[in-house]
Amino acid sequence: MVLIAPGVRDRADLFRRFGELFEQTGLVQSGEQVVARLLEREAILSTGIGGGVAVPHAQIPGLGRLAMAASTHPDGLEYPALDSRPVELVFCLLGDANTAADHLAGLARLARLARRSEALEPLIGAANGSAFVEALRQLEGS
Image 1 (cartoon, helix red, strand yellow):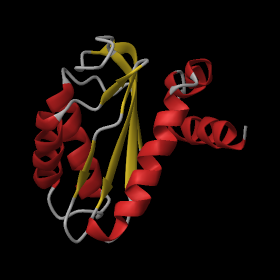
Image 2 (cartoon, one colour):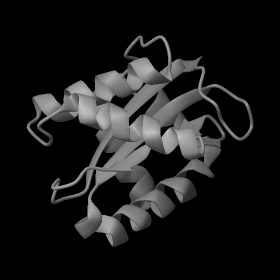
Image 3 (cartoon, helix red, strand yellow):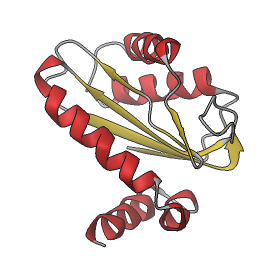
């Protein structure tokens, strides 16, 4: 699930869009629960990892699987980050207690990807969800 330049005002607005997306696809019963869990996690420590990338994540009881959505923000989105830089790419990862190992592996994989700043341009500039997924596949293969 990919949101291309969704035109959100801030981090909370983006989280609402992610919550709606997860609810519309039937992965969760309540998008509001997603928003609440993401904001709870952010209150502990921002998930803006630097380099223009953020990886908000949360556990949703009963989800039963790992789920991810992404968004691009070519003009930058204000988001508390380690380097104080606006984010251009956001990966939102959801799991539950049964997917904790996969959840951590996914976070590590995304963190490694974020360190490859030159490789992120095709993702940030993707014209649509299909182009984003194809660029991600190519990055994963390299």
